[in-house]
Length: 91
Image 1 (cartoon, rainbow, N blue to C red):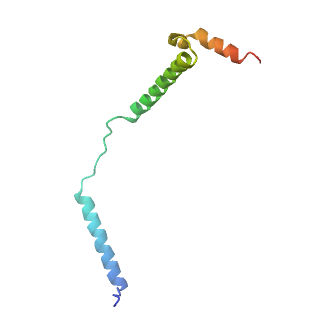
Image 2 (image 1 turned 180 degrees about the vertical axis):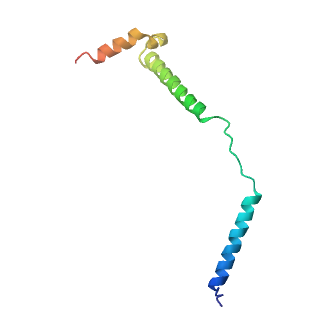
Image 3 (image 1 turned 30 degrees about the vertical axis):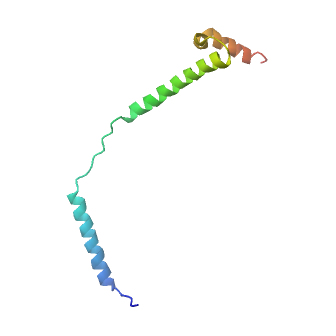
């Protein structure tokens, strides 16, 4: 087996040629602009709305299915004041 030794000058010329080739490639290819189909503020709004929808659905299911109450009663203010009074009873 024979090893090929490359001088420092050859390495410099090779690296210069590679840099020139990369620069030409960058010039040829047009810059791609990313266009978002859904803006970030709309994504954030959708996530927040879906959180509140899931929260309300969970409250209704928990109150009506697990607690054997009426689903409409889960969203009434009187129900929540009763629950808060019940929790803070000992304080």
